[in-house]
Length: 197
Image: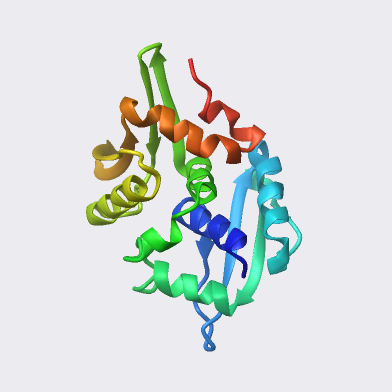
């Protein structure tokens, strides 16, 4: 696959995309699903990945969701081996610095799992819901974003349904740089995630 497709896949895998189990010949398929309100974004991602042969969009009527799948490929299988070293458990690969090196990847990931926290003129921060990753993976991600994009991130603990999880927090001092980095790659469906006060 070309670097453009890989950048999109990496951002999506860090977020809502997932890779199905490896086949016997080390291939894997990719799948991405969104609800009705993000259908235009889903179609855009599918179009950007057209060289990988995505299948037609399908609908899950009961949940008002849409998804597409890219059939099994060896290059996607390589990503599966990196992101799922222990079958079924998604982890951040040690070489994430080589994979998460394009603002496009960061923007895809932010559109999937990010929120813009605006409470007042002086409170303006971005957060990434990295709930599926352990602490050390979140630290690895924060260090990668700092090194590759010059954007500070903190790893914060939060509680949901009685369990502790980790998320990444972009402090105010890095917000301007963060927004300028991702904004050129933000789809209109998610413009609200980069709007300044």
